[in-house]
Length: 154
Image 1 (cartoon, rainbow, N blue to C red):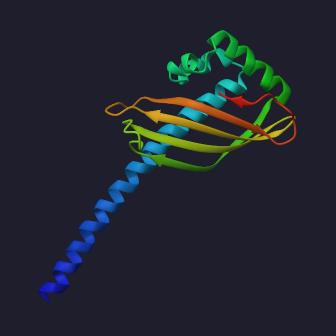
Image 2 (tube, rainbow, N blue to C red):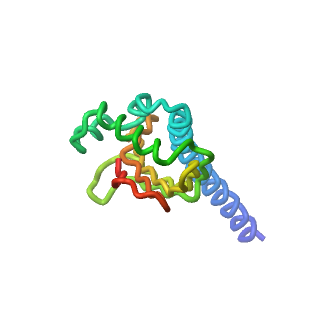
């Protein structure tokens, strides 16, 4: 009987630990989803300039594009796509420290986005710095299904 009680206690403790870990993952992913929601609300309002604040500052340096040019590029792309109708999260991945040792938590969120003139698959890569709650966009990839657009890796 003692063995059965010990097994039951171990099972309950293990379940509680696994539940706590899974809740933490869901919370973290929800935080990343809120960034994407905020981004899409800015896009719907044609407020491309404000989306800059959601990106990691090095994004513009690494891609050799001044924010002003990037905003203009966004406007042109979204003019071709037309107004956004809806967006839906299709799947996501989360990863801790990278193989290269870069600390933090990384998120990949994949969306299906319907615009008036096309449907796109859009992928966000985001990072939450270690010891911080701030999540920033490292990259957004837009793949239209019908329209030809210049590669929209951002």
